[in-house]
Image 1 (cartoon, rainbow, N blue to C red):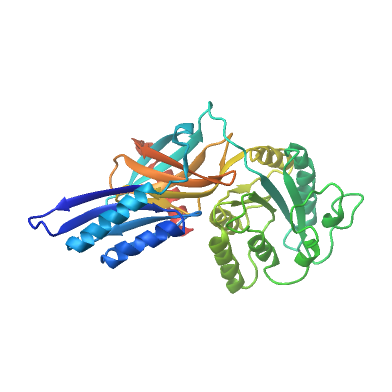
Image 2 (cartoon, rainbow, N blue to C red; image 1 turned 60 degrees about the vertical axis):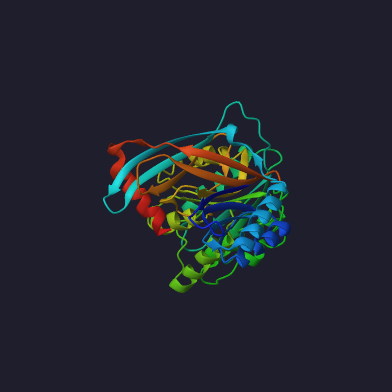
Length: 389
């Protein structure tokens, strides 16, 4: 995909390239980009799945440079663009509110799958991580365990799952087992023999476990970690910073971290790690309704469609929050919600690139925000939270 706007000046032998956008696939395209670099054009790459979006700006070129440039563009146009366009399978709605005179406008965007679409469904794996340390009271541990057992009935028959208990000693989850890794009810894709490696008195073990479970970039399976804990904050602040940094660096959009808790004691920490893990934080303080609500939420993650999501604004003055590379996966039965900050309250374009069943897909959408000043306070709070992440 190549678009450029050459603007000729008074001199025939020179030309100014105002704007170029190129989607880079693999090595053949990267070789072609060398011509641009030789022509003194600056190149900035934003890493995406299996390709990059390169934004090239610059430069006045002589005749020979101009010929090389357009020859390169012609070669690039002849290369196949492998991403499948699924734009028509989605629709969007956006609501905006003014933030301040300096910050511009906040926009809440929802991307939802059309009812007529019949996309491929991704493989997925759900890992239930249960905190058995002293941070979780015995009565809370019992409720968390019951919720996991009940939620297994909500999973697809082909959904792989595992249960990891993070504790000093091996906890009994089922009547016939003393270790979650040995129970016959568990179908594990990985970590089958490694549950015991997460048991010990090491500081920050719960957070380190979550960081370890983030899959590699080339993993086409969507991994969901459902963390059930009252607290994730280790005693040492350095450990907290190190492990959250690992989650951010490893997360490539094929992972989501959902946090569940019966207490709001460490609400901010749970909310923070779920956000950087492309997931959500759920505080359910009612002991009588926790199991029911937890099972309902697990049912909603049944049918994933897109993973490895990357959202890039194609219009000037638009910022995607919390980050274009930390957008959660799209499911068939619920919209994807994310935020943007714009200089002006005007329509803008987004390019969404993702993986679906091992293939690259793209969605091109024009976002037309509808003003709603009644949500200004809520919008400011959401934008502030996303920026903090």
